[in-house]
Each structure stands twice: as structure tokens, then as C-alpha cells.
Image 1 (tube, rainbow, N blue to C red):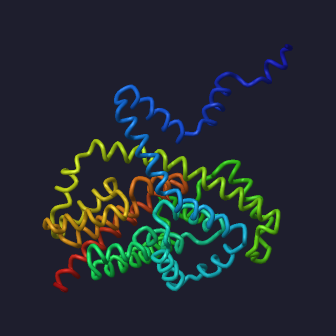
Image 2 (cartoon, rainbow, N blue to C red):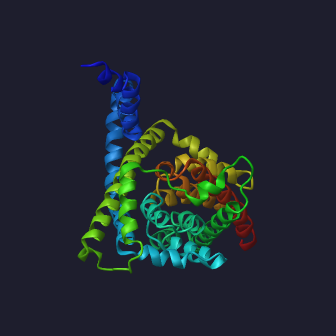
Image 3 (cartoon, rainbow, N blue to C red):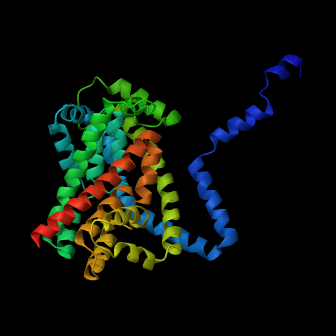
Amino acid sequence: MNRSDTLDAPSWPSRLAAGWRRIDPVLAALALLALALAAAAPDQLVRTAGFVATSAWQIAPVLLLSVGLAAWVQASGASLLIKRALAGRGGRALAVAAVAGALSPLCSCGVVPLIAGLLAAGVPLAPVMAFWLASPIMDPAMFVLTAGVLGLEFAVVKTLAALAMGMLGGWAVRWLAGRDAPGMGLADALASPLRDMSRGRERADALAAALRDDAVVWRFWRDPARRRRFAVDARRNGWMLARVLLLAFALESLMLAWIPASAIADRLGGSGVAAVPWAVLVGVPAYLNGAAAVPLVDGLIDLGMSPAVGLAFLVAGGVTSLPAATAVWALVRPRVFALYVALALAGSMLVGWLASAWFVLSA
């Protein structure tokens, strides 16, 4: 080896830094969590593995539907139609997005691939945020379940809450996009909200550029380029979501195992204006899923909890539950994630306070 070869070779700190960058942080966190549980609580490791497997199996059909739908939107060119429909500056685009979200059968995690596809296609963040916030709160199946357990009035109020949350979030994003406060740096983040997804993202963007000017092709599978676009998008979104949800389910299992249910019930057992913020804050980590949360709220209402407090818990938990928040964090820039969480928390509190007045007046 001559001197020039030695000088041109990367130093060991450079090689170490390059190797560190290649480590997947989500998979590394899962491995470290498994090792810690194996050393400190092996029984909990077994229970956590079972919880993760069960949760992944239960949500798999929705995620497959969402990943496939998002990839189809991109490959067929239907994203162009959606972009035109939601590109208006008035309230119509936000209202359409909020209604579509409330009617969507996708959960807070399942909606993430579709959101990624819409943002990648250039749909403005304001209507996307309206759809995003409204979708986890209500859907047709959830409406039937809520009406059957908590009553038709509660289901209608929750539907109105979903629409209000969507509209509020959309208007807030639109307002902030034109009024970037000094030092916040929101304008760039709102204009380009997606994280950089490395080489998989670059390949998808290259395929998208080749198809951008084409007409909508509903039977995209007849076009080899569109089939490749579908495969790339489905694989990239599916891998991103699967990784973060496995970690989120593992953390959720530890939370359910180590946070006493009585402590959650005590915090949710109040009524009045002061109880709404507690319901929102408890709902973020303690929310299980829509089907399990509705009977829980019904039981707490029977024990004296205000229906408005229960509504705040359902709304906040549906939008910002741990799996949903983890998936959103992996998708968008930190400032957009912070805005998403802030809108979800503020909107949930506002919904709870307004619902409190409504239930009092309608009693």
C-alpha cells in the first residue's frame, strides 16, 4: 500500500460515523428495549411480545388497505384529481377534507400512508391536516358503535367534533403559513412537511416525476412504470409504518402494564370545566383503541363522569394515541409534528368545553 492509498482511505472516525448513520434508529430502539426487558423483566418481555403480535395482527387489515390505497392514488394519478379538489383557498376545500376524514374508515395509524401520499403529491397541508385530524375521531362503524353504547346524541356530538377539529386544524395551518412568526421557521416546514426518506423516497420521487404530466390511468397495472411506482410506494410506506408501530405497541404494552388502571379512572372520574384538560392529557397515553375506549367511557359516565369529559378523552386519545403519534413523528418534520399535537390537544379541550355547555343546555 502506497502513501496516496493511505491518505485517500477514510479514517476510522469517518467509518464509524458512516456506520452509525446506517443504523435504523427505530429497530435499534426495539432491540435495546428487548435487551433491557430480557435482563430486568423477562416475564414482561414475553407479555410485551404477545401484545405486539396481537396488536399488529388486529391492525394489519387496515394498514394493508391504507398502504395499498395510498400507493394506488399515486400510481394511477388520482392524486392529481385530489390535489385539484383540495387546492382552493376558501373554506370549501377544508370542509370537503374534514367530511372525507369523518367518513373515512381509516384509523389514526392507518391514515398515515394516505397522508404521506397526498403530501408527496403536492396537496397543501391545510386540507390534509383537516382530513388528518377528523379521520381518527369518527367513521361510519364508530358512529354505530358510539350510538349503540353512549347514545345517538353523543354520537352526533362526536361527529360534529370531528368536523370542527378538522376545520380548526385546517384554518390554523392556513393562517400560520402566511404569518410565520420570527424564530419559528414554520413557513418552510408547512410548505414541505415531509421528512427526507432517503434513497427509497428519492426513487419514488423519480418515478413520480416521470408520471406527473400523464393523465389519470385507473387501470394502472397495465403500465409497467405505474406498476413500479405502486410497488415502490407500497414498500416504502409499509416498511416505515410497520417499524414505528412495532415500537409504539411495545411501549404501549409497558404503559398498560405499569400504569395502574385505577389511577387513570381517578383522573377521568371528575366533571366540570377543570376535568376536561385532565381527560385530554390522560387520553394521549392511556387511549387503547376506539372499540375499547367507548365501553370504558360508558362505564365511567355511569360512575358520575361528565359526558363532555368522556368526549374530550375520546377525541384526544383517538388523534394523539401513542401508536398514532409515533407514526406521525416518523412521517413529518418536527415542527409539523409539534403543530399537529398542539392542534389536537387544543382542539380536544375546546371540544370538551363546548360539549359541556351543550350537554348542560340539552339536559
